[in-house]
Image (cartoon, rainbow, N blue to C red; front, top):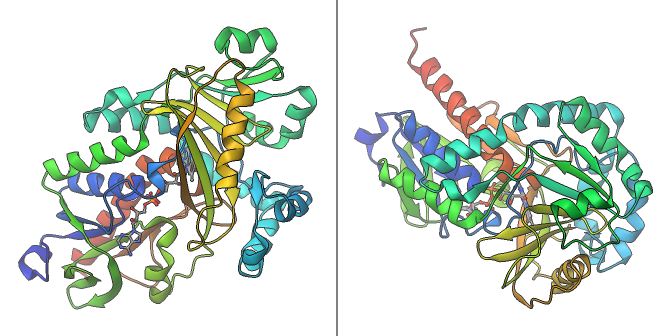
Length: 413
Ligand SMILES: Cc1cc2nc3c(=O)[nH]c(=O)nc-3n(C[C@H](O)[C@H](O)[C@H](O)COP(=O)(O)OP(=O)(O)OC[C@H]3O[C@@H](n4cnc5c(N)ncnc54)[C@H](O)[C@@H]3O)c2cc1C
């Protein structure tokens, strides 16, 4: 099935829009279940937000971003260009409705409900990625050496008590380390970090872009079709759906929208108006030997540092600045400074800077499933800071929903 093709449509074909980590994982899972699948992206697979993330598989991240006390961070967000959380003043009017919902999500009841949903979605994330990487022929990309969160002192750790308590509540294994414990794991870390929290069951993807590419290659090798085109609109048709793309229309039984931060244009028109906002994040990459051997989190800079295949990557910061404005490279430069401060004696020069768009919903819980009021339209959107972690579980949920929809459609009344 490529263009309007009624014969192919009869075989339960699905169009997946977006070949980031989420859409790629969905496309492969649907293909494995016997669906004819076309994966559509306007760009090379994995070139969107999934290109530049920090590679962390973080099943312990059950705390949503909006926690009690979030309001106190707002003044710095607005005024300090290098603050880890930032809303540029020019974007503030656009961001306000979303920010209001974000702050409202910090209510204790909402936090507890979001944590429960995130914990369920994160379950078995590491095992799922190990299996997916093996299947895609790149088992070397997933390394299981744990994550080390670094704090300057016990008082700084205490400020994060809500998140650590939630992790404990959901059975996440975390070992508290003193300075000697940090040095034993990662001798290159600066002495200013006196307290560590080690999550031994966490893992890292050492090249997120190559990972997506390998998954898509596997998808194509098993008969899936990849189409480079912009999806402009969707509409229901007698057979199911019609997707208008820059390369002509596609007919299919079902559509999955997995277009990351750009999904609203396609979904609003179908009645699913999600409060989706981009949280722009940055990374800087350094050539040369890495001063660490696993993912390290500089909690005071809200930054993840990862020894990638392509160099040492420091990624992070949140900038609520929309999809259109050019990057503010001061934010990347602040990350580069943070890396130099964290590893004394390490003198590599930065070689690459990157900015990407995390697709974020106010309560940090993605929308995954059938679009209400439609038949055969599904969305997997809003994975925020954890889209890599949750892609395989998302793929399973979407594939189950598509299968359930197909059964319902073919069942006698
Ligand atoms: C700095 C940073 C660090 C991060 N670190 C981590 C981490 O360590 N662990 C983790 O789990 N997550 C992390 N994330 C989050 C993670 O990267 C995202 O949640 C994830 O990449 C989202 O994947 P996606 O497939 O939904 O979106 P994307 O990767 O953005 O893919 C969407 C795709 O849709 C395509 N598209 C959009 N509109 C259309 C259209 N109309 N027609 C055709 N194609 C279209 C785009 O070209 C793109 O390829 C990080 C994010 C950032 C920015």
